[in-house]
Amino acid sequence: MMASGAMGLLFDISDTFQATLEDVAPIIGTLFFFQYVVLKRPLVNLDRILFGLFMVMLGLTLFLVGLEDAIFPLGDAMARQLTDPAFLYPAGQTPTYLWQDYLWVYVFAFAIGFATTVAEPALIAVSLKAQDISGGAISAFGLRMAVAVGVSTGVTIGCFRIVSGTSLWVYIVVAYVVVLLQTMRAPKAIIPLAFDSGGVTTSTVTVPLLAALGLGLASTIPGRSPVLDGFGLIAFASVFPIMSVLAYAQLSAWLNRRPSKPSKEEGNAL
Amino acid sequence: MDKHIQMNNLLSSLHGMIRPLLGALRDLAPILIVIVVFQTLVLQQPIPNLGSMIVGFLCVLVGLALFVQGLESALFPIGENLAHAFAYKGSLLWLLLFAFLLGFGTTIAEPALIAIVAKAADIAAEASLIGNDAAAREAYANGLRLSVAVSVGLAILIGVIRILKGWPLPWLIVGGYLLVELMTPFAPKEIIGIAYDAGGVTTSTITVPLVAALGIGLASSIQGRNPVLDGFGLIALASLLPMVFVMIYGLLVLG
Image (cartoon, rainbow over the protein chains, first blue to last red):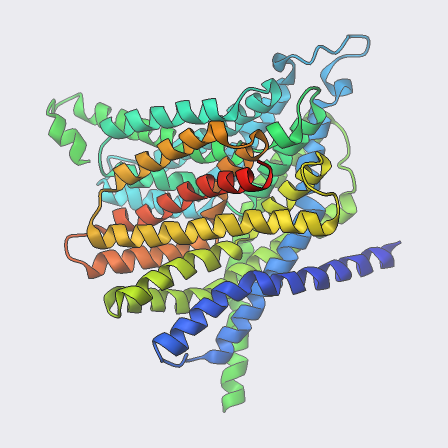
């Protein structure tokens, strides 16, 4: 049993490794073509670079194999267990499958969104930079919290959408209209940062986990279909932090302005 | 002597693994903590297939660390160097070709995208939207991935032209989102979720650093441009256009 499991893993790895060659070929081809044919400059440290490319391929292979064995099943199992009628309803009670019955799904969504975001290294770097640029008007900690609250609110509302089976595009349209209105009013310097925070949060590990969670929810909740309702959580996790960061910037600009300097220009200068 | 240098390179590469390994662990740890808390306190059920899941997690951990370390020691230096070289001199045609291929190539290699399109193909096959054989699923997954990659390539191309010409970014973005919303009613319902998700998936581990390097290089080579704003503009466009292209792909394939 143990041996066959290990053999299976090795077969998976060698299969995936071959596919990975095709995945990385375009970018390697592009870089080498421009380096040698267009720029006509040989690469220094070629053996180090080749070793690095081998690490990229091996790493991608292991990551994809592990995703199949761990992240996807885990997201799916959590969704199944949290929506299991035996867990939702005490023995003897008739299942009603109303959206309010799925409280633990929302709590889990919020916790996962918050936990994956708050420790994200890219976000920590960005928020420290923002603190510098703004001369302390924006605190790094406050910004990190704003992004984390944005992501977790987004994922929670996204799960509510799957549970309730409502249309994805309505939520996204409303979200972008809000973002648009905020963009017109928010301090200028924060805008690129706010939009960036949407991209930063959806990391390589978070994306597959959210996909598995959404698809698991859509396939276990009665009346939902994975094809129609399963996707969309990543979109929520990308839009909502934009909103929360802009809101945070507006709030801190307003608080800074209020006590002494009533001039609008001062607040906008950040 | 040469051997010695090679050994040193190898050792420094392995030594460099420690930081990305910690980084990957930091990515995974919060997820694991939340899940363990839920399993023990809320669900009070064992995790199914715990053994293979632990092996899988180790694969993800080591894989992510190797991937990031390999990128930093091989692809990023070449890519950043080229991005700067083309941003500062050289013909416009090569710059535009480079911009397109950089966006295309990095997106094809993006791990999260590979995983998501495979999942989307499985779901579509289960719902009988496409054939249920491996070939049909692979064709659908590759079609999705190519749509996203071509759209990111085009987005970077448009973004570079925007930086050169100084077009205002907000109008491009607002226009792009209007296009997305206008297309949504016409796209097949089954594709909309994946299309909207595609925007967030593309801007990840490998695309962002290389594309940002191109944007920052370009912006700092032209007077009166703001590197922060222009570098960001490329990424913003790269998460917008995939939504449009995946919906077009859905219209063509699922129609």
